[in-house]
Image 1 (cartoon, helix red, strand yellow):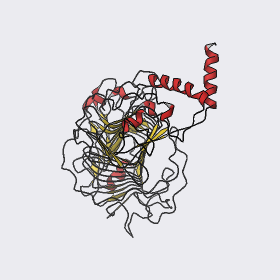
Image 2 (cartoon, one colour):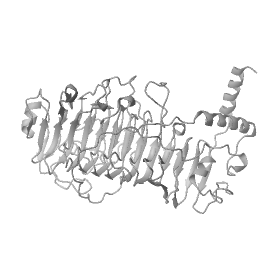
Image 3 (tube, helix red, strand yellow):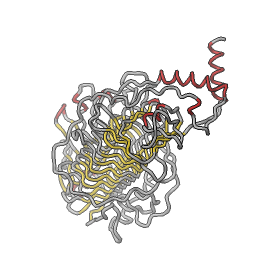
Image 4 (cartoon, one colour):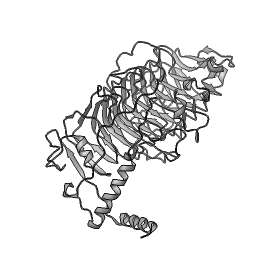
Length: 544
């Protein structure tokens, strides 16, 4: 039979095959050698269940602690059942390990309702096959949903997203106590060149370094309705400082760190450095955020920083351009409210080109504004001086603002109805609809029912209707003492595989509810074996 005819026959056979998926169970009372993965005869380890699974299956992990590190090689749902939360404990002393590693072949996976601790490097890592100069089709683990998780006590970062691991959804996730093994570079969420990420309704706190950032050219990222507190470095960064080899120069030849990002409706409190920082960003929107007592060790609540990109000669290190900073509420005991940085290194690096785009913001009494660019006559002053010198913040106000411990406005606050309507913001931190005129900051007093979902920008998928309210937040602890921020460090080895490649599962091992048409079974088995051979990932060798 001609090869083209055989290929057509295979495609038609698969198209006519019935859709199916299996659910495999894991229990601390299970057995890996004699079980079949059914609810009556569960496996003992998650790794065994994954090795017995096929793409599209669900691995349901019952309550208990599982001392293992997990690797997803094909698309799965990994979860605990409703009302339970199993604990995956991957030791920080297991060399090169990750709590859960998701390979590119596992794109489309969902990780839900689990507690994840440890990992030599990360709690969760989305792995990549992409490298600069490689095939344009290369990608990372994309369309991965991470929801209703507790990620804690990790070796370094809570969640690591590597280049071209696009459209990650992180929602209703708590991340805390990062950097248990190495606290020099241990963020809550570290996204390097992953487009379309959405982080929402999450609580990130007590991180060794920054709460979260997206950098390396990440596009169309949305950070919304989160609380970020007590961070060792910054709170939220749009851009930062990425090694040049992680930029996709085909789409980002100017080395912008973040493009078309939106940071809205977040409460950021008690950071050592910038509350919300912009580094080499393009078209970033920072709207309706509440920042309280940021920058205890340096920088400012809103900060326009510079990037060095390893001092490599080919890197371009652009200034921030075209930011929009509107409707934010800034309450600072140290008076560091807005700053634009300039550095004399590398011939002169500016934190901003043009206007900072600030307006309709609420600044606490005593706020100080700084512009360190040598071409600007203004260097430091109060709101009135800043406004007149830069022609910005025409509608911003200064008052004795306050918020509750979780960032809500008290009755009678001067922030109520003091903002402007924005197309980029339709709800508040609780998912309530905004009402004109908007309140300043993350909270809308007397907000209405959640607004309907809106179409996402190009390249970003919608997260649907408004999710559940974020977790309640305890009183903030005292901020850490000041120290110099750590520069991004050199490469690290890739995490080791946590499980062997998935062997073929005999049809007899399938739960009784699964039915596969007999003529398709052999064909499916052969195609699955081919897929597994092709999908063994190239290890990602870099740390950013």
